[in-house]
Image (cartoon, rainbow, N blue to C red; front, side):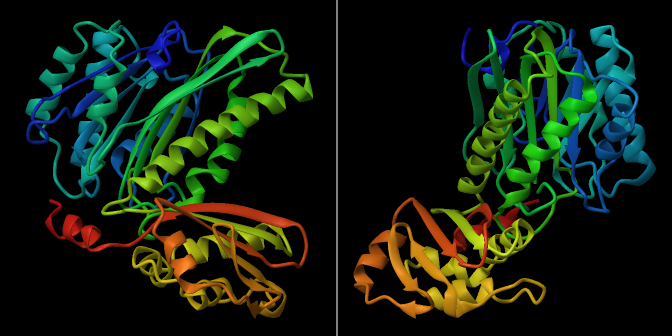
Length: 394
């Protein structure tokens, strides 16, 4: 099996340029005609795009067999016209694939507030789907990107029970990345057989540990969406707790791989920051502290400048009034170099810390030494490149 998501039997995809963006591919499809279940998680932004409302609604009573994706236009803030255009995209795709519109999800990403160029999109759908059985994952990966600098594929495989189970897919995301699924799209396919309620439960838990633990700039997008298709090709024993746990771990790992790719590719970013909080009074406290630190502009700029300003980290850690925190008990590390031990400064060579912060990945570990709560978040440094991209993005 080729190690891309279209290497899975019964999974088809492709992408083309139809003119929404300059010269880059901007329309893609994923087609899983034999899907036995689908699950999805969506942005919690109350200004969500038409495609979010539409796809969430149809998934309540239908198993998706396909999704049509455009980049370059978010179709958000477009009112009734946006709703009409979303339904038209679903219908056009369904007509070409011999499906019901309620079996076709719609996803959009790009600039907010502009009407969809349907004079380009509808003929583009017809051209794109002339060969619905193409297996062009590369074109799909390219067509869903916006300000991304790279494609973001994942392919993981593990023997569960007696079956080789695969989870594979692709994501996009670079800016407006924050909790509650933030700007990101992600599509995963597994060759496993799982009922929809269980698939949804497992995806929700995986998203909570991955895509909901990344941040680039603290802004939550209007269009975030992740979909998971199950082809039903291979079956493990879902009533076996150990086998189900193995699948959950595989799915979570796939989501974390994609989430870290998104954080690393943050707009203008040069450094991936991994924030590990251990020893918190609760898991909730750990998550709050991790996200407060990863979202801090002061921490992000300190990392970019290779400035070992540990006070910024501790200030961000202690700012949540509903979190149990005692700085006199805390240990702090930059990568594996100790900065604080039980709240006291460790006499570390400053240049050694500077050198650690110049690495492509910086792991900050805060041990609160209170209990066993832990959480990990991912983000990136904040650079002038972020400003440049977002003052010219239109």
